[in-house]
Amino acid sequence: MICQRCGQRQATVFFSQTVGNQTTQAHLCEVCAQEQSQTYGALNPFAALSDLLNNFLNLGEGAIAEITPGRAGSAAVDPQMQCPHCGYQLSTFRQNGRLGCTRCYESFRKILEPLISSIHGTVRHREETAEPQVPSAAEVPPAPGEGADSDVQGLREKLKQAVAKEKFEEAARLRDEIKEMEGK
Amino acid sequence: MAFEDLITSNDDWFLKSGPSSEVVVSSRIRLARNLDGQKFPNHANAEEQRKILFLVQSAVSSIPETSPMKFVRLNEISSLDRQFLTEHQLISAEHAASLGERAVAFDLKEGLSFLINEEDHLRLQAYRAGLDLKESFQHLSRIDGLLGAKLPYAKDPRLGYLTACPTNLGLALRASVMLHLPSLVYTNRVGQILEGVTQVGLTVRGLQGETTQVASAFFQISNQSSLGKVSPEIVEHVERVTRQLVEVELQTQKAVFRQEGLKIRDRICRAFGTLKNAKLITLQEALDGLSALRVGVENNILKGIDLPNLNRLLILIQPAHLAKTAARELNPEQEALERAKVLGMYLKNAEAA
Image (cartoon, rainbow over all chains, first blue to last red; front, side):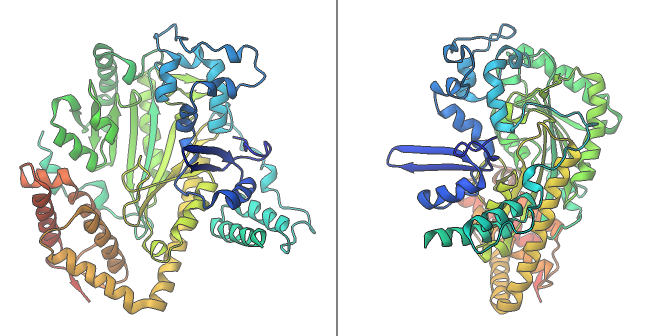
């Protein structure tokens, strides 16, 4: 899924913060998470992206219309909508995150697709015989001269690479360095 | 059937040791499958559930590789027995708690368990000791292929296998490993490192799976999504991250022993003394102690007990196993007493070097 803050990079971190009785939740990319963490405090390593569905469901009635911007008729989704095949109600899905039958995916397609896309980052199943994908931009090493580690931008670049290469210890160290520099 | 037999069985999968067993307790592959056009179990009525159960059971029992599987209908056994199966990792807590026509088919020697009418019509699980996701996946894939030839799996060209919960779409494949990371916990680095793991698209959980509670130094990591990916990619990704965690843990362990060897030895020997001699012991204290004992065994500080038996103890000290061993219901104090007895028995011949 795409970062809800910058709307550009892949979201890899789930953010949840409760202040008083108000809870703020967001799915962020690494870079935005760094910036937010200055304001919101430490990240919880156990809040995984798979919690997304629960959070989506907790957002309440407005959520489905919200995540389908620009789609004709999306605001007029009928919560009483039923799967013609099994009689399952859309409102039940909103309560428990589970569907009624295998045909529900077809019946509620318009509503489910944006959700599936935000959970998985895609709505395209790949058959096992498919060719491996070309590496994404995040995995391509930067051109020489980019990413001097003297500044925060450089560190962020390194952080992105460390995350892409799954060097998480290095990523965590870089994140702390960035935090420290930004704290100054 | 007599589940008590499982307590003393000596050919369970978790009594073997596998690659990187010193850090990776176990590997598990899970596939979710549903029958086309049918209601998912939680929306189906008893008769519809029975029909699915019958179809799936017939297919499972006709597979040559799985012929000696034990088949248990969960509504025919007590809640204690269901908890027992959960502790043995044969069914999920959700499966144990649900009413209706639910069942499990399992083969402990092969590390296979097939959950019928859990959240999905069929969930296939294959366990292996140590880090062995690839083997485990190939094994389960073969069985899945045979079952798929007999059962009309629900599959969409765009969404892959259709599952009750949209988070499982795609290959409906979950590859997970249970890790023991005592040195990272001891040096307070585990939070930071596991946070990094979540940044590369994996999920971190505590010992019992679905909850986020962390029990001692035991953690589970798994892939989050299997839509838009191919299986070797997912399996390799989880294995690669796991290998890195194994290396970090072992390096940290070495460093900790170099710098604070005496202190660590002291902790291990104290934990050993407690587990061997306590008269009453809680589950949490026992888990913490077993974590220390694992480190002791790996570093030749403790003799007369091995990792497979420590793996076995992780299961035997759970409440339903203690109740089954004692053959009666236990109040908390009796449970603590029985737990201490089991530990004392297994550690009878063990000693600190």
